[in-house]
Image (cartoon, rainbow, N blue to C red; front, side, top):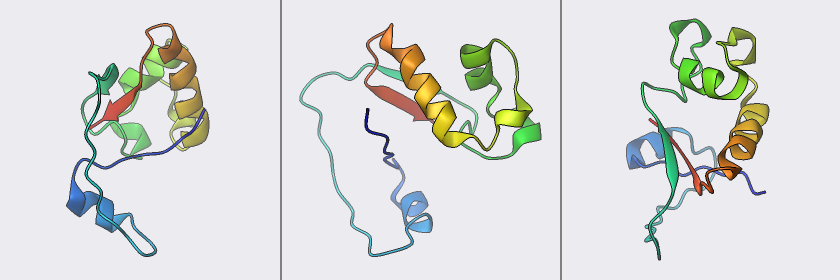
Amino acid sequence: MTLDWVATDPEHSFVLCWAECYLYTYVTTRPLRLAYFDGSSAAKVVSSGVMDAQDIVLWGKVRPDMGWAEPLRIQELCKWGKQFKLDGFVRY
């Protein structure tokens, strides 16, 4: 499993770029199977509820203690997504 991210908003990606940055354009060769989490679900504001949907999918309840556990969260989402043959996740 390879963990990586792609920003769909160039302005956002440049804010997160700490070294030399490049802008790439990607085109898929087939339709992608993605799970979409709405509501700023990648934000790190633990008490605001933005990651609640992910928590419920993963752990069956809201887990504020897991707000900063990003590597574990994506690994668990990938395990969950295998049953649906997902290619990735969109957290908007």
